Length: 167
Image 1 (cartoon, rainbow, N blue to C red):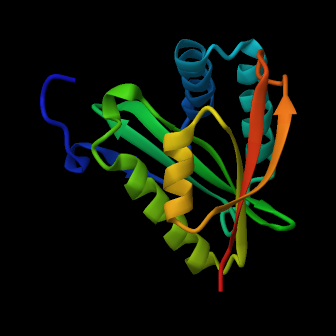
Image 2 (spheres, one colour):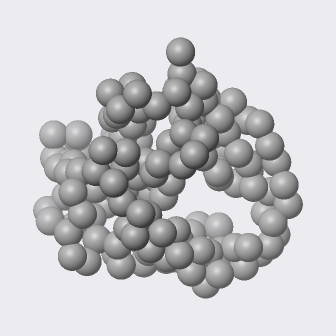
Image 3 (cartoon, rainbow, N blue to C red):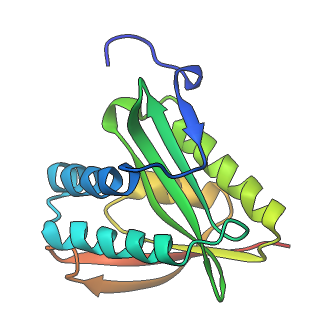
């Protein structure tokens, strides 16, 4: 992006609209293919997870953050209820909107939501290929607790689980 973007240029909503789920699946599929060489298996993994989220959605226990610029989705994050706490999933930012503090803002919104809803724990899965994301999670208190090799994304990766315990 040539012009200077700021967070003030981004709208963040917490409700899903028609087309959101499909677009977030597409965004994951296309960006992770371009940036990391992930295959269609990753896109279908995201599709299954978003279907699960939608079918189990409870507005008291779950939340989405949909980031838009000029009416287009440019970022996304969701918190999903699980027996062991909230799972942070599908955190993605379009490359043209990275580096302006949007990722930090979404993590702050997520952390505030955890506290407001009374969650005592949260976790997420990522891969070792995303050190910038891992750094953001660590700054908010998440700790690497598990690593495992995986071929679920169309290429070999190391999946990593990060956990957060809240007081």
